Amino acid sequence: MDTNHNRPHYINPYLGGVLLGLLVLLTVYITGRGLGASGAVKSTVVTTAKIITPAKAEHNAYMKKFISPDHSPMYNWLIFESLGIFFGGLLSGILFGRVKKFRIEKSPKITNKTRLLAALAGGILFGIGSQFGRGCTSGAALSGSATFAFGGVLVMLAIFGTGYILAWFFRKLWI
Amino acid sequence: MGPLIPNGIINGDWSFVIALLIGIAFGFLLEASGFSSSRNITGVFYGYNFVVLRVFFTAVIVAMVGLLYFDYFGWLDLSKIFILPTFLKPMLLGGVIMGLGFIIGGFCPGTSYTAIAIGKLDGLFFAIGLFIGIYIFALAFPLFKDFYYSDNMGHVTLTDVTGIPAPWFAAGFTVIALAAFWITMVIEKRVRKNFTEYKF
Image 1 (cartoon, each protein chain N blue to C red):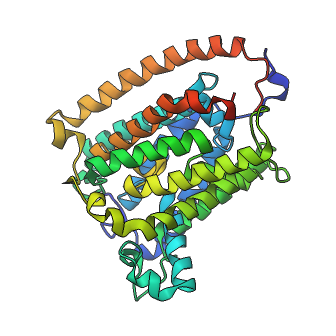
Image 2 (image 1 turned 180 degrees about the horizontal axis):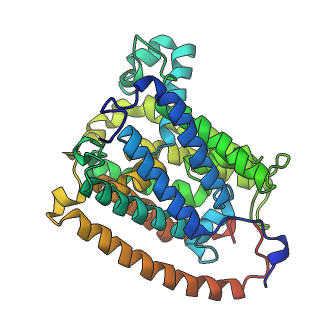
C-alpha cells in the first residue's frame, strides 16, 4: 500500500551517497583520515572512569592507552566531530520537520520496554564490537573501505553478513 | 599538497573547528538520508527499504574513485593518509558482534546520535548501551588482551594483500554496487506490495 502522504521527506539516497562520499574524500584530503563515531564514546568512557575511579582507570590496560598527562581524553578530534554529528542531525531534523518530543520508534508487535531494552543491548554489543573492530560502521566500514584498507572491507562484510544471517531471528523487532 | 593538516598547510589549531564542521555535514547527511530511523535502517535486512545500501555503496564508490583521482592529479599523497590496521580474527569477531548489535539495536553509533537529536528515545538507549559496552570491554580487557592484538597484519590495503591494483577494486566495487542497486530495487518493490503498514 502506498502511503506517500504520510511518508517523511528524505533526500534521494543516491544524492545522499554522493554527498557523503564527497565528505569522506574532503575529510581525508584535509585531515589524512576518515570519519568516525565510536571513538568519541570511548573517550567519554575513559574520561568518566578517570573522574570516578582514577586509580582504576590509570591501571586499566586498555584505558591507560588513551590517558595522557597533558590533556583530557575529551580533547580529541572525534569528540568535536561527534558533537557535530548531533548538531547536523538536529539541523536536518529541524529543516525537514522531524524534531518532535521524545518518542520511541518500534514495530507494532513489540512493547516500548522491549524496544528500549533491545536498543540498549544492541548498543552494548556495538560498543564491544567496535573495540575489537578498531572502529564502527563509520570509521572502519565506510572510511576504511573507501581508503582500500583490507580491515575496513573485512569489518563491512562481517557487519552486514552477520546482519543478514541473524535477521530472521529478530524479525519481530522490526516487521 | 594534501592531506592539508598533516602536511602543515592548515594549522593544526583549526582541527577542532574543522572537526565540528565536518561532523555537522556528516550528521546532516545521515539524518537527511533517513538514518535517524532504526526501522528505515533495518529495512536493508528485510527487503522493505534499501536506503542503507544505496547511500553506503554510493559513498564508498565516490570516495574510492575520488581518492584515486586526487592521487593521479597529485593533490593527495596517499602514502600519508591513515590506513586502518588489520587484525584479522579480532576484527572479524568485532564485525560479527557489531552485526548482532545492528540487527538488535537498529542503529550504529553515528546514526544513534542523529536519532537522539530528533527526539528518539531508542537512539538514546542505544548510545547509553555503547557507553556501557565500551566500559565492559575495558574492564574485561585483560581477559582477551592477547587475542585483541593477535593476527596483526599492519596497515595493509586490499592491494597489499592481493597484489591487485586499487583501480581494479574501485571498478569491481562499482559494478557490484550497480548490480545491487538494480536487484534491491526489484526486491523492494515486491516486498512492499505485501506490506500493509509501512511507516517510519
